[in-house]
Image (cartoon, rainbow, N blue to C red; front, side):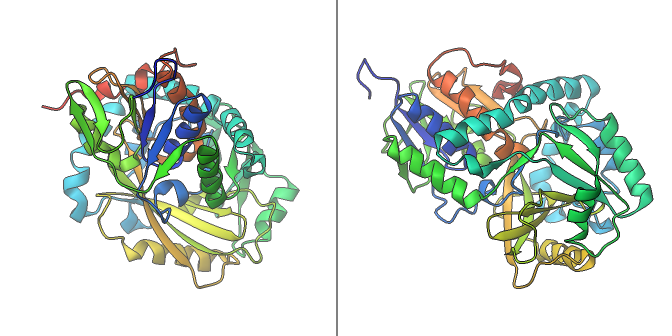
Amino acid sequence: MTQASELPSVVVVGGGVVGLASAVALVRAGHPVVVLDADRDRQAASWGNAGHLAVEQVAPLASAASLLSAWRRRFSAGGALHLPLTGARAWLPFVPGFLSASRPARFAAGKAALGTLLGDAVPAWQRLADVIGRPDLVRIDGHLVGWESAASARAGKAAWRTADIGVASMSDADAGDRALIAAVTRARIADAIRFHGSGQIADLGALSTALEATLIAAGGRLVRERAALTVLNGSAGVDGHPADLVLVAAGVRSRPLMEQAGHRAPLIAERGYHIRAAADGWPADMPPLVFEDRSLIVTRYADTVQAASFVELDKPDSPPDPRKWERLEQHVRELGLPLSTPFTRWMGARPTLPDYLPAIGRSRRVPNLLYAFGHQHLGLTLAAITAEQVAALAADTAPAMNLSLFDVERFGRMR
């Protein structure tokens, strides 16, 4: 336990981007911090995602629009959405909560809440990048979206023009943008737009290294083990790591930890797939490029290029589906992208709650338990702004924004 003059000590369960960003914010605020994470090889979704700082994605995916488009987006029809029958025991209980959250009033409230977080997401990343000494890792040069047919371009552009894209803006692709796209694909691109205000992390591996190094240099510790949460006499703890506060930031592994404290956390593994290849032939100044007809995003990192897609609802530890990688490789061939084999294949599980909002707050059941998980597709985008809210919660001061809609109590208690 800490001395009276010290800030509370914190054990952070989870070393993904949300956990590490929060740990850095906590240790710099003066808290003694230990991070527990067993992912030595960086296989979590934090380190295999598209690298996109998606401030334009204000509308939660739990929506009437998602329901109406689900059938044409199914994997068997060439789309990115897959609810495998073998995973039905995982995704069937998720469906009622999704349907409830898609009702107009719930959707509108969720969009407002998500928009508040996203509004300061990029500045928060710039602040954090300065702290870790790597401002070069945060690139705010937007992203490109292209369509392969005139019909899909008309529909896609119309949808984006009426969408709430928050602090982002968009314009028709100019001659320079079109030249960039033409340099990497042999496919005919009927039309394209550029988003402004969005960005990317230039190198996820370098980001992880810099966050860990900053944590350790500031006196924090990183321990490579999986934690088990215990609750005794109304207080949370982790065996072998006594601390005043526990922060659950374990991504898709957060569910059983929160259940120990009596909270329902109906997370599902929303699994995504990518393939990576050497960056030869891919322009260094190309921002993330979305081929919207294929639900495919291609991102240039320091020395690799990554093609990513798919929304597969399943258990986190179910075997990967090789058909997803084969589909990605097919997209690369059909688009004529300058990505040469052999590809590196990856699959990771995004932690997703039925309303597509994260859970961020302090437990009302176990006062020394904090939580930050369930960021779905926006874990990277929201990591830095989430870390700032966590630091305020740990100091028992009012966070900069209203976190009430992110309270895990919205899902009720364990029976």
